[in-house]
Image: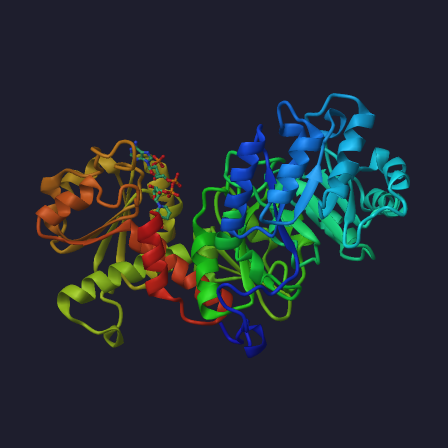
Length: 531
Ligand code: NAP
């Protein structure tokens, strides 16, 4: 890696349980009865929220004098009271005067915050002029459920909200692209008034996760996954436990995984747990990216984005945005790991091939007791790759690099031929593999999806043909124990699991990101717990 991307100053002084930023975590309460809301507010406190938002418009049969008294007085956390009308995305359809009366009453009964819509903010603020209790604050909000306007339009909107007498500005727009978030942050980071900036939708997730980095006053975290009050809202638990929300600071380095879809990725779990354990001032987020070029052009700061993992469908197209590429990754034609060097340049790697090949080498070494110093145990071996897709390319180039003789067998022969020609090997159809045994002690690497869930009874090669191999690797990791690996084990062969490739490619990514060795035990523990 050359220079270390992390220095002593990147080490967090704070560890678990300590907060490094003043950004508040607010949990919206969406119960339809007072009883439900009381239960929800206790849960919110248990999870670790700082504030609860009482959404009066969710209550059925709301009777202001009685219900507000109970809700505000019995809340174990400070309260933010919102009574969102239907014309601003809420559920209240009744009389406007009554709505504002309820908000004024909430203020008198001790609510810490009232959220009032920009459209009526002047009128509302005039009505409470000189009557505001000490420490009580008015949030003036504006919601755009369609898009995110230009930087200039956002700037004007923030100015209008400030001019309405807001103590706290809140703008919520909708992300059509992840780069929309940049425009909102660009404006709000310079706001003179405390600001809540939310970009709704999955593409806007980083506006919520990174709000402490950009000085946000507050962000919202749902009580549970099904109880969100706006699109793209994470749960409070995920904000705290998965994304280390309390540890994010203005100088925190941002890493993430770019892909589409990306929400299923477990990488944030692994990397954030590792960053926290080691005490690195870094966070790793899900990044739903449509256009990689636009993404890298927009987020080009050294701390944002400091590096990322890259998954489908960007592994090939992202190459054109890189300044340098690992030579084997270039040959493979796919990258999955991108690091921004201290000079700002983007460097890419393919850690898939490293992870898979290392796992296979270690499998061979364990069986013959050889040490890594002796060189690769793959040198000179006949290495049969089943499949010629992304994983097939990684294995074929990786094996070739280690001095193995490579054979590629694929259902579509042309693809096998193409890859075999590139690595200077032989091509076969998958059907030919049953009777292919030019020598004994070969290595077999399955990279086809044959045997993957849900077709777990399929296998790419008959059991009897396995006798010519010494080691069998399967890239498939769902399930971990594929039929191929079970039969190889029954035949007395060394087996290497696809989960090893998966986890080891993660170790490599961590090393590339941080310049430090990966906390391997922690990664393994988390993977087995969350697989
Ligand atoms: P890919 O690029 O789509 O390639 C799929 C390969 O499987 C092609 O060679 C394809 O042959 C072959 N194939 C698909 N269905 C087949 C069938 N019914 N019969 C015979 N061959 C078939 O996918 P990939 O990204 O390389 O992934 C392949 C497998 O590796 C998946 O199971 C994936 O989960 C796994 N993988 C694991 C890791 C890890 O970390 N363990 C990493 C990457 C991938 P054709 O060319 O004829 O279509």
